[in-house]
Amino acid sequence: MSQPTAAVSPGKSVWDGGTSPMGASYGKLMMWFFLMSDAFTFSGLLITYGLVRTSNPAYTGTVKDFFMSTAHWPIPEKVFEAVPFLHGVELPLVFVGIMTFILIMSSVTMVLAVEAGHRMDRLAVEKWMLWTILGGLTFLSCQAWEWTHFIIGTDNGTLIKEFVNGQWVERTIYGANLVENQYGPPAFADFFFFITGFHGFHVFSGVLLNFLIFYNTVTGVYERRGHYEMVEKVGLYWHFVDLVWVFVFTFFYLV
Amino acid sequence: MAHQEPQVMVLPPDKEKIKKLWRVAGILLIITVIEFIIAFTLPHGAAKTFLFVLLTIVKAGYIVGEFMHLRYEVKVLFWAVLVPMIFVVWMLVAFVYEGTKIISY
Image (cartoon, rainbow over all chains, first blue to last red; front, side, top):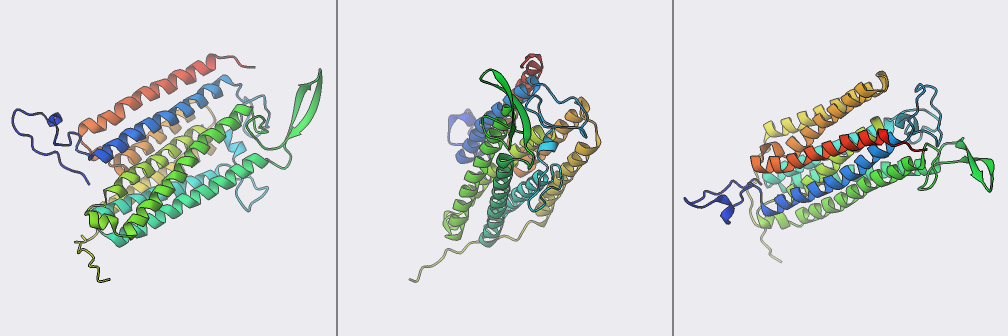
C-alpha cells in the first residue's frame, strides 16, 4: 500500500514530521531495515564460508576422477547428487534445483497474494497465501530429507587415516556432523549445517508468519482494518528468504 | 448473531500487472536453468564463477526490484537499501582474496 508523500506546507521539510518522507509506512520501513540487518548476518556467514573455503586446499584433479577426502575441499555437485526414491542414481544438484524451483514459485504466489490484497479481494488472498504456505512446507520437507541424507552419508563412506595414541590407524567415516565429515574438511559440514540451517529457520518462521496472515485474512481482520498491508510486510520477509536462497544456491552449491 | 459483515469494494484483477509478475517468474526460472547448463558444460575456473555471480545478481535484482517492489519505491529508500550492500560485496571480495593467502594444513 504505497502511501504517497503528503504535500508539505511551505517553509517546512518532509522530515519535520507528519509525513512519510520515504514514501513507505512505518511498518514497511522497519521491515526493510530489519531485512538489511538480516542480510548482514547472512553475508557474514557466506563471507566466512568464502574465506575458509579459499584457505583450504582445493581439489585439483578432473571432475570425473573426484574422490572424497578430508584433505581437500569437495566439489559440491559431487556431494549433493542424491534424490529421494532414486537410491544409487547420480543426479548432481537435481534435488537442490527442485528446491530452488519450489521456493521461487512460492515467492510468486506470495506476490500474487499481495496483488490480491491491493484489490481487497479476500478470497484471492486466502488462495494465494495457502499456496505460499504449501510451498514453504514443501521446501522445509525437502531440506529435512537433504539433511538426513547428508548426516547419514553414502553407502561406502570415506576411509580416513588418523594419528591415535602414537600410531596411524585407518577408519571409515559415514556422513557428517559438526566434528567429522566424510565429504571433505569438517568445516565444510559445519558451514552446510549453519548456512542452510539458518536459512531453513528463516523459512520456518516465514511459514509461521504466513499462517498468521492467512488466519487473520480468513477471520476478516484485514477486511475490517480496510487494508492488507500486513500481507505486504510479511511478503517482503518471504521474498527476502527466497533472495537469500538464491545466494546460498550459488555460493554453496554451484561455485 | 446477526453480525453484519462490512461491505468492501473488491476490484477486478489487474491482468497487466499479473502477467508481468508471471513474466518475472519465468525469467527467474530460465536463469536458474541457464545456471544448471553452465554448471555441467563449462570447466571449473574463474570465468565460470564470474558468470554464476553475474547471473545471481541479475536474479537478485529481479526479486528485490519487482517482487519486493524496491524499483518503484522513493529514491531515498532505494539507495538506503542498496548502498550498504556495495560495502558487503567489497567485504566478500576482500575476504575471499585473504583466504587464498592463508596457508592451512
